[in-house]
Image (cartoon, rainbow, N blue to C red; front, side, top):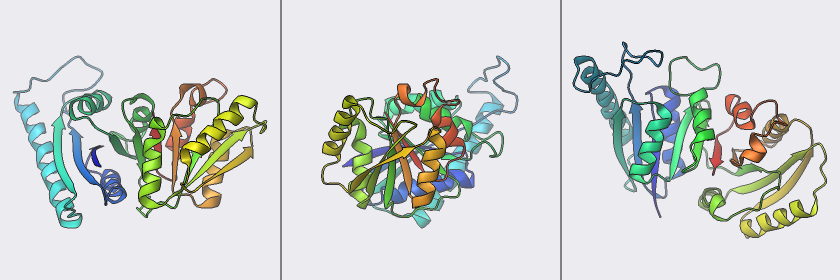
Length: 279
């Protein structure tokens, strides 16, 4: 199976760590990796209406710096990640992150976006942190995998999959979760967190459907009686030393007003493991 994976980079350690995580996660799979750098101009900000001309001196100088840094990145990767199954491409552009991602996903038929996430305390001015969380919310065309800066790759042994069982599952939307599980023989721990832990008939039917989809993959079902979903999820992951969180980004679950903040934001800013937003 061939994959096309898009990885934005600002050339920070955080971004390089996300790249290495992606290369290792898909080590045994034939992949094309697209490394994207969004360059900025000192005289341009989102607060003014100045749009630089592509042939201006400042624009060309910034683009050249970006392209040189991308070439250095390729040299590093070829030295430490020489994998005949992987091919590398670079893209340098002046754009907003979300717009650039959507454009490249469409043009290159991207399967997965992988990003670093520094959280709320990360260095200012970089394209990660809040932008990574926004990408997980708004990029609907393909899954987004966010990798915290301190996470070093090890073959994932356990992925936590939180759900409220309120929507029928589709095999297609779970395909990347199933794929990772098969690639690394990873167990999937399905987690239901609610103040009232009892499932109604519809939820029980959806739970059974999920079990059928997971099939012969290692999996188990867990329930936590807790009001705060993000605290429950974080505590569950920490107590079990789980390796990843994966969730389907259904607006009715993660963005409903019952939460003080959208769960993807709350967990995203305090990420302790990589987490995969499925759509």
